[in-house]
Length: 172
Image 1 (cartoon, one colour):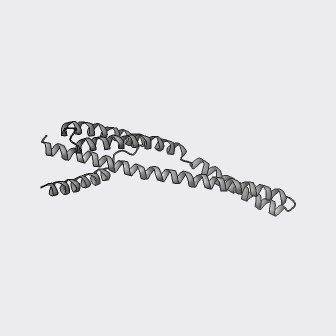
Image 2 (cartoon, rainbow, N blue to C red; image 1 turned 30 degrees about the vertical axis):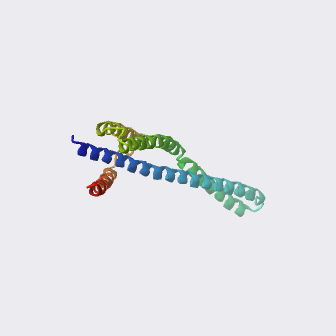
Image 3 (cartoon, rainbow, N blue to C red; image 1 turned 90 degrees about the vertical axis):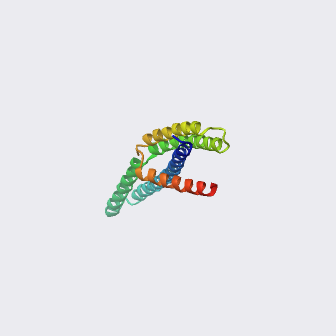
């Protein structure tokens, strides 16, 4: 592989890595927001259930009101149970662990890039390190059970191509 081809391949891998990191940053933020919304709904549902039970106790003298309030209380309880069952805390914990992995990979990525820019690494050494880095990213993708997205790879390739064209056109 020529130095130019090696360099381009390194860039493709590094830019792909950056794309994956950004994608999972967004994914993690979405799970955190989802978890927050569910906790809020569970809290409101629980307060509603408590309020309905207290209201039912006060309305026991009226049979019609008692039945209505019981139905309301059961409805709130069902909604609360449904919210609790839907809570993605396990998935969020997994994504949290993966977020830590991604943060470490980002540091590794930046180290490779800095070494490449300052020429402390040869093209071949940087290629080997970035190949190892991309392998680690694929392992992370497998943990999330999402596989590698062809569309994501296409976008990463286009970004790498655009960057390389820009870099080499200004260097010439």
